[in-house]
Image 1 (cartoon, rainbow, N blue to C red):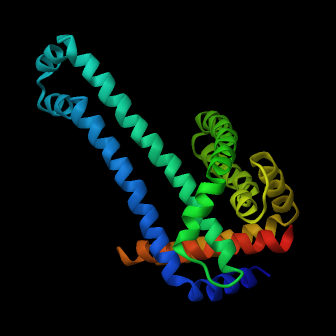
Image 2: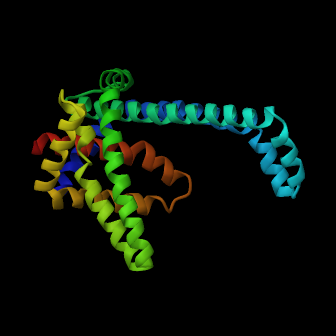
Length: 250
């Protein structure tokens, strides 16, 4: 029963609430700081912010003068490139810390977990998680492009069908990180196991996501508090549920 996984997640979360809350906040701060540095480099060093302001004011001639300066385009390229590098690092850090939190979920199902586990698992399995994430991302990107074509042909109906297909296929990959956090396996093996287990237990897994989705939808109506509860409580509970689901079904 789906409720079993939610109840187990709640009971486990209560015993480890402080660790999960601190871990989520620390992860968010780390990723946000790196991303903000990237945006700062991109808009200040590249002079993009100045050009955007000039464009908004209608001073197109001054933008042309900046670009005619030999150092103008070079500064823009260097600043833009530097900013994108920081944003890429932020994305990588997010994946590393995400698998770290899944590691905490796996540990919490055995008793108590701690924030240090997030960094330990991130160090041990971060690269593997990144490879798995990229592979899944490529598959989803291809599907997104196909669905984009369908949406263009059938604007409303195509968009609805496309969204359903994307979500439906996305569920098949939802156990990739739980598999990596639980077992000593590679990226391809984790994807294969996720697809195999999710396919055999598809409707049960779908029901789990539907219930969590309804909970998040209801809580999101509460300004600020809803977002905090989702990030610090519901998010970790879903992570625990997925790890517990994987363990029971593998």
